Each structure stands twice: as C-alpha cells, then as structure tokens.
Image 1 (cartoon, rainbow, N blue to C red):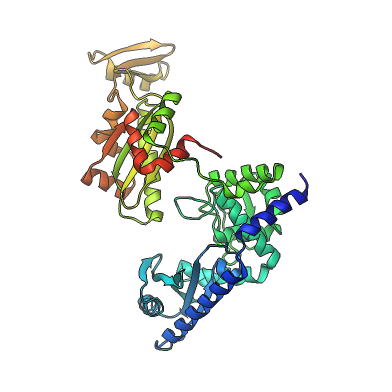
Image 2 (tube, rainbow, N blue to C red):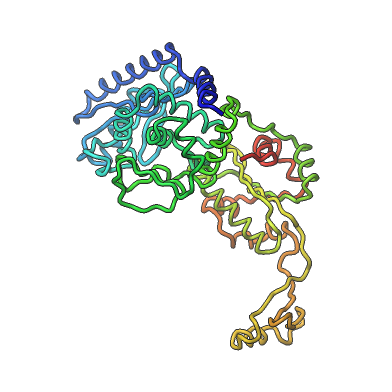
Length: 455
C-alpha cells in the first residue's frame, strides 16, 4: 500500500459525502432564520439570553444528507431550574410551533424547519465546563474548542472518519450502539492530525488507550478507550464506547490500511432472513434457539437497551447455570411492538440427574457437613467418592430450557426493572427450536446480522 492508495479512496469517499454548495447554503439559511426567530422570542422574556448553533453542522463536519440543526439557548447561570425549563420551552414552541417536547436532562423542543430536523435546547451560560449545572451546558464549550482547532483539511478528515465508523457499524454514542460519538470522532482526528495518522495509531492500540488533549485529567477510568474531555478534566468522552467497538475500529483500521477500498465505507447489511432462512441456519449449525418474546416496554432507546442487555445477560446466565450451554445470544426490539431475548444453545435438554460435587474429604468440617446433608436420602445417588471428593447425583430442577424459561425461576435472574414488570404483568411467549423462525417476520434484518456475523 502507498499513501496515494488511501488518499485516492478518501477522495472518492468525499465525493459521495461532502455537502455541496447548495446544501451548505440551504443549511446556513435555515440556521440563520431559526436564530432570528430565537432572538425575537427572547425579546419577550424578562432575562438576557442568546442563541448558539452547535454540533457538526456548526463546525462543518456534517455529511451530505444529514439534516440536523442544533440550537442552544443560553440562559443566565443563576436562573432557577424551573424557570430555565419554562423559558426554554416557551422559546422552543415559539420558534418551532409544530414541534414537540422531548426530554434529556431537562425538556427541550424538537421540530422541523424547511426539511431540517431541529433541536432547540436550553442550557446555562456558565463560565467554564467545570461549572456546569446540567450535562448539556458542556456543549457550547465543545463547540468553541473544536472550532478553534478544525481547519478545512481536518474537518474533511473528520467527515471521512465518521463515514468509516458508519460503514463498520461503530458510529453512535447511544446505549444501543455503544460506539463513537461525533464529538469523540472529531477529537480523535484532531489529536492525531488527520484520518490516516489516526488509522495507523488505532491499528496498534493496546487498550487501555488514553488521550488527554489538554493534559489536565483529574480522574482515573477503567474504560478501554479514555479521551479526557478537553473542557472537563473529570469526564471521559469515550466512556460509552464498548471494548467491542474499540476492537472493531482496530480490525477495520488494519483492513483498510492493508487494502484501501471504498466499499468499507458503505457496507450493506447482510440480507434479511425469512423463516426458511432461519431454519436453514439452525439446521446447519446443529444448535437449538430459544426466545423470550414480550411487549416492548415504553421507554426511549437509551433506557430500553441497557435493560434489554441486562435481562439478556441474566437469562443467559440462568440457562448456563442449569446446564443449557449458551452458544451465543442477542436482543432485538421494535419500539412500537415486541422485544426479544434470543439465546442460541448447544443443548436444550439435560438428563434427569445432575452431578453435585462436595468438598475434598480432607477439608473435614465442610466435608462432614456435605456428607451429613445428603447421607441416607432416597431422592439422590450417593454421597460417594470420586477421587478425594464427595459427590452426589441429584434430581435436576429443570430438564429442558423451556421448563426453566416458563417457570417462576425466570424471575430469580437479573432482569431490567421495566422488562421484569412487563414479563410479570403482561406475560410473555417462549419460542423454541424451529419456532423461533417466526421472528423473521418482524426481525428478519436483525436475524440476518445474527446469522451472518462480521467483525
């Protein structure tokens, strides 16, 4: 590989992702019109405040087709929280009369303007990011920091890096993806001085990897990737980024460097599966799948997916402990419909008896306690000696994965709060073996990704 190979690929990618002049002008006009509306709305309030465009569209790191405009309205730092929320919503609805309210740390208004998706968010105008009163107060400082450091070439490299992250399914700091945020992508490109230097470095990362652009960090972190926020010495910008996504970036950085090609930036998803496709995969693999299917709790994704992942881990651990060897697992959700805890098993049935080992005989107190507990009973085999240990063979509580999943013992595993209440109050279905193929009607794309895995 030569540098020109990667340069040519990056140039070809830019042809596809860089906003053209008409798109840039349309966004600038929309942002200016919105800021004017904000100033008009603020004139009617009894406080001094201003508007600031932030995010990728403010910094020139957005990709063609992105239609997001983020406007922050900065209110005095001594304003009461309830007043900030009330004034913020008043301005939001004045600027976006057809908008609706959403909630992050506090409510804000989201709406449409000339085809652009607009978030109008109130925040406090604090002197530094260390003085924030709410999490969103940091954002103007992020904007100022990067605006000072991003020239046209670095901004172009950020766009290429973002497209690369999207192509490898590692872009997004939501708790479903646990990947790289736009802000993190920008910081990494600035830190390394470009897209190619970043790839070369990432290919050789040995987590834990740490960067502190301002050399001011005051806390230690255990995350695989640590990037100290240059505006806040106590925050790791990469805290949400999973070890898997760090490894994914490393894998594809090496792949792209060894074989530069445009296709990595625009990979299609594996084909969705129909029920016959699911059955074919299970038959080929010789495994058995089980699925717990229930009504999706009414939560936003950043609340829903941590609960689904916790519940999936709890169910898989419960199956493993009972001898139904878990091969792989996944969770799927349709926010308006069903959620699924999907577990693929090496075995879904076990013998009526299970082996239970006691302590070595020479550990007298514990050994005698084990022996006395089982000696003389007629509902088990033993105790007997196997090597230097007492062993009994006792009746297994559940001989099939289905029996366990349909029993009250399911509620003894660690489940997400809202998942547990949904299962207990609304009930759930258990699909086993080929019956899981029915999930393809709603989750064919997800099952396609499951059965055709890639790094």
